[in-house]
Amino acid sequence: MSIRVMLVDDQVLLRTGFRMVLAAQPDMEVVAEAGDGAEALEVLRSTAVDVVLMDVRMPRLDGVEATRRICAQTDPPKVLILTTFDLDEYAFSGLKAGASGFMLKDVPPAELLGAIRSVHSGDAVVAPSTTRRLLDRFSPMLPSTGREPEHKELGRLTDREREVMLLVAQGLSNGEIAARLVLSEATVKTHVGRILTKLGLRDRVQVVVLAYESGLVRAGGGGAA
Image (tube, rainbow, N blue to C red):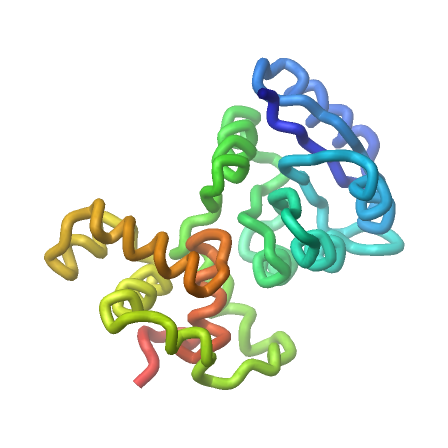
């Protein structure tokens, strides 16, 4: 079954280029397009989509707010943010809004296709270490989320799960966490899956974001005291 993709960008030429690349793939199909976030929300009411390629700087409704509204829906499509500059505030805000990752607009076609497939399968396409650099740089500059320093959802985690979450938030891979805690990689993967389920998160990127917002990890440093 083909991955149903929606292209959201106010530049028609860019959408055309992406559509041509995706149309050549046997496992992908562009089922919808939109020129801004408001149009995207309207189209999604009547079109089934698996992955949305979302620009951020658009008229009427920007990609960050559109992503927030999409991800708030029941069983929403995955959102992949497209940005011009690496490590900018739009990528940061898009991740906080619920996107599963971000890609640069000039990414090689093979990387874009791989990212779409990864997002569709439930993986994040931004390394937690990259997300952490985003958070380190921009979290002091953005408005508070209003969450308490110690988020109540973290109380649902076991001590081991909390330990694993902290290491995920610090950008470590499953293999690195396994070595640090003297566990098998399969066991670490199980712990990560339980963390996602208990906290209602979609991927490892959102684990990092929650760790910052809850105070478990602080900008520029490791775990909170």
